Length: 432
Image (cartoon, rainbow, N blue to C red; front, side):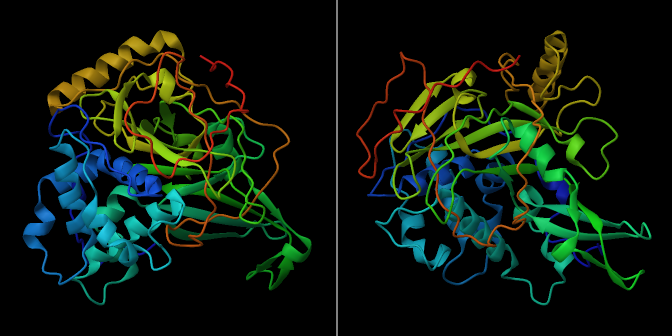
């Protein structure tokens, strides 16, 4: 990887903790099959480093772009949502719908992951609009790519001469196969497990100058500030859905999946979960759970915004998971996703102490955190799409909402609400 010739946004100016403390903002009105759009916008609105930048209005003050600018649209949207109480209509986003993705059509059911990819790509293009002839490395220094972007390393080792060949690729999200995984750590372990290349899929070694057997392994080489994970629940050919429970932790240690696996834990904190209810990608309903700057979790279902517990958040059949890197925490006693309960008080006190210094509320308690369960006999799938915008027409997903029995949905029903997956079994208790 060559160093960038130009830094478009200084990384030290990216603030990972909320700069202002408040409860959740407004819900979003559904104008007919726009639940996917509402859910994605809410997840982006509560992404702390992105929200801090958009609330400062730095982009619009310097923007000289004529016509469509996704960063200006998102800046106006986030400021309006976080300063409103009653539900609003995301009119500016709806008006720019076809500019975000040419294949989108209002009134038609769309995939939330597809819309997320196109939206972030549109934001990236807006950040590059004032710069011409930039090298690839410099293009990855925008505020958008420095928040969501990272790099994967693909390492191939020749069986014959043991030569090592490394290549690097930028990514903006990580799609994970969950067919044989019961938890997020297990799916990540499967992602970084070496793959054997032989037969028709052999490797052409430049040193041996012939096709040889080899191993190929993907690892996260440069970790993003915000880790976005897509759990691949949908089959694009059959439109079927994997409705199994995949456990995911409130705190995730990414260190075991890095190219440099030794070292301190690389801790991420969950701040948003996007859910799809329904039995196939052809119908259903999207909603999400987000963590506001006051440290509390809310279920955001179109116009409805309701307080929820972390236990409820961790019981969902998630489609998209959003984790923010805990760079504001002190180095020392950090928690991983499988941390023993005896360590929780010291870690929590550090979170609170650090967040108070930054003027925000730290993570809620660590109770109910899941523990990674390593799979055996995984079914391998090697289709990886590191960059948002590559193979965007992924199929859409279902996830039944496992709220407590006492919790009820309020507010007007959405016009695009499909049948819920009432046959799905309630997930078993999480491993503590």
